[in-house]
Image (cartoon, rainbow, N blue to C red; front, side, top):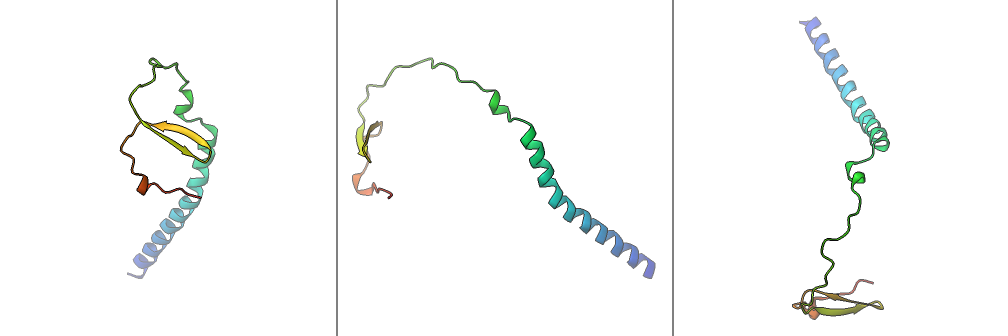
Amino acid sequence: MKLLGRILVTVIASLAVIFVCLNWIAPVALSFYAAKTAPRVTTVVPQPLTDSSVSLAPGTKLSYFGYQFEIPWTDLDDRLTKLDP
């Protein structure tokens, strides 16, 4: 029984060391792999727009911090609009 306990402790300790080493080594190895390979999205190239027309629907004109733009929503509540510093 004493021998079985030693073997069990040795197996558990070995698995714990392997698990801890994998938790430290795997992220580093994966980061090197990710740095070498380009993501698939890099193969996407810009395409010309098929419809370049501008909507004539009424919108709301806003002006913040010296910039003026128009948003497509007309139900914007001015009381709930807050400016961040």
